[in-house]
Length: 307
Image (cartoon, rainbow, N blue to C red; front, side, top):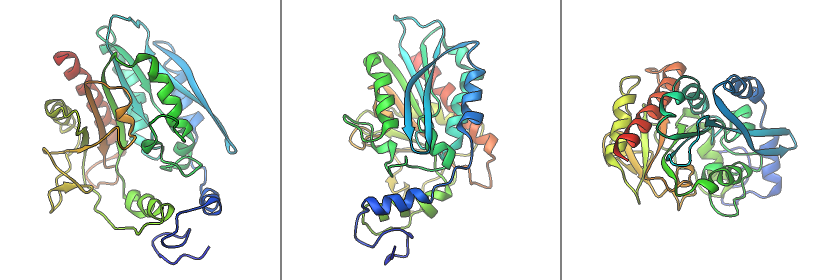
């Protein structure tokens, strides 16, 4: 297709995508890794000490993807619930493997004091294609609302719905990558018929708090734990991170519910979205996974200590 705006090779400047453009985008998506090998096999290895259940299934032309959640085995209705989500954006690798690593090595430590619920890979199609969107060119992390157009989001909403009012903490594990500026933000602008305005990718780990329920002490407790593993992202020259004012070192705020973000789905007192930078010359993929694990542990410890 003719591309007037050189920022992205699909579509025409100023015109939102229609069906033809979305099909052209989908044709460019190539399977690059295996959900079954990387994620489902790891989940199978956790069945000895966690309850595993299928909470949904995504049937796409490219395949059928079962969605699994992990629960602490000694689930008790008297205890609060703490939720860990990963892979809402499938390309954000450490979110998926951080959730699985935490489930394997640390979930049991907290299971006597809270009910632990983990959805380690919310978007398996996107995980396999190292993609932000689902095959309908929809961003699941802008789709957590009633009548969601994203099957990934709708399935997770159904999972948590019976437990609303019981959640104490929800941590959603993400990454900010160089591909955000190179691919995903240009694609978003093209899809919506807008002009792409380049931004700056922050080098380091940061958190997104809820501007309508800010919990600064909680965020700082998480950052303190993570700083022992990897570096915290500084503000840019404007005092911002990804276009939002830095409200405390390593912390920005979003209107989570209004934006349809995953961290809004539980109504928990304590919520945060992690963002780690895997393309940093100062961090390895393993450090990124360890940073996610440290964030989850610190979030649970703070929530339990402060109620």
